[in-house]
Length: 348
Image 1 (cartoon, rainbow, N blue to C red):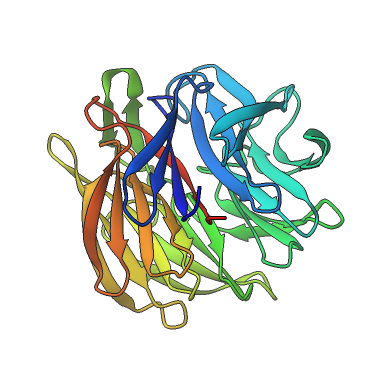
Image 2 (cartoon, rainbow, N blue to C red):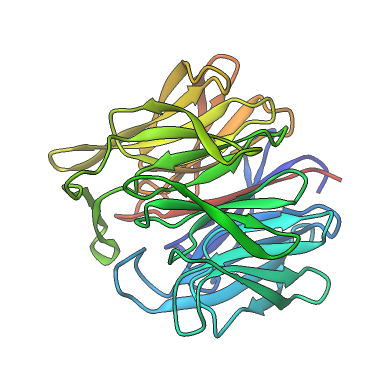
C-alpha cells in the first residue's frame, strides 16, 4: 500500500472494500464479515480500523437480534485480525478512537447490561469502562479534538447527551426536540453540530424497503443545530426540507449534511448540503444517489466520499466545484445495497 485508501463497509453485503483514493479503483474486498458492519474508526498509530457490528439482521427499531462485536482490521494486510466482543452490552453503532488516550469509544443500545458509552482499551482490546447515560440507545457520537468530551445522539430520545470522558460521567443533556441523528465536532473543538430530528421511516430491509412515515405530532422540521461546546448551549440552527440523515465536518470546518428524499414510490436521489459553520449559510447542494448517509473526506479536505445506503454506491464529490466526479460500486444491484461505514487510510 502506497497511496491513500478509502475503506467502505457494506452493511447488507457484509463486505469491506478497499478503493485507491487517487485512481478510485477497487483494489481489494474482505468478504463474509460478521453481520452487520456499521460505522468505523481508524487507529493511525497501529494502522488498524475498528468496525462496529450493530444488528444481526435488519435496521434500527426493526426488532431483530442485535450484534455485540467490533472487528479489528489490519489495513495493510487487508484482513480481519481480531474481534472485540462487547457482550453483555449490545448493538454498538458509532465508534470513535482517541489517539491521545489510546481508547476506543462506542455507543450501545439499551439492554440488560445497560446503555451508554463503552470505553475500550486499544492496547488490550477489552472493555475497561462503561459510561451510563440517562437517555436510551446511544447511537451516534462525536468526541472533541482534545478527547475531553463526547456528544451523543439517541435517535428518538429528545436530547443530546454531554459526556466528560476524563471522569467518565454524564455532564448533562441538550434539548433536541424530536430526537437526533448524527453529531460531529468542528476541527477546532469550538462547536458541535447535530442533525435533528430522528427520521420517521418505515423499514423492511429484507424486502429492500425504506419509506417515509408521518412523524409524531409536534415533531419539528428537519434542521441543523449548532452547539457551543464551552457552554453546551444551542447557538444557531438552519432548517431543511427533507430528513437529515447524517453529517460530518470537513477539515476546514464546512458542515456536510446528507438528506434523504422520497417520491411516491420510495427513495429518490438524495442531496448533500454544504453549510458555512459560522453563519450557517447554505454554500451548495449536490445531488447524489438514493439515501446518502455516512460521509468522510480526503486528507486535504478537497474531496468528500458519501455512502449511499439504498444504492450501495459511494458518491465522490469535489468540494472545490461542488460536483460529483465519480460513483464507486460498493454493493450496487441488490434492492438495498447498504453502503455504510467508511474510513480514509493515509498511505505509508
